[in-house]
Image (cartoon, rainbow, N blue to C red; front, side, top):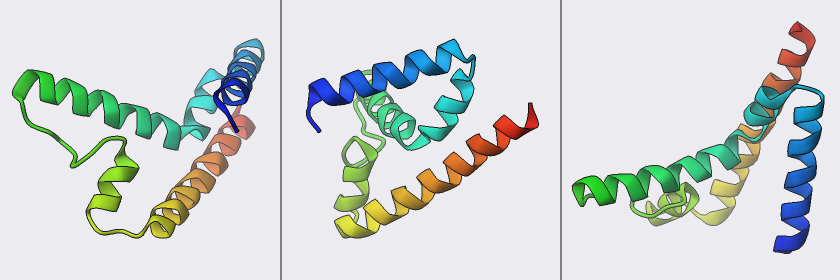
Length: 96
């Protein structure tokens, strides 16, 4: 998917979450994307303030690859984390 499709899809998901007032659930379910974004923010902030890097490379999936993890292992682990976070997000919908 290109940038146009991904941005449109993200905007649609965000808009729907705001309309149905479930922003936190979207944040939980998109935890891997949030983690990837936060790793970049942490890396840039740390480097600007201290001159040192927190991760070998940001976004975090590159850090794991540089630590020697093969790409399929990183992908499968992120899938597992995503499934767990989606189940948690769906469980929070039932609690309301």
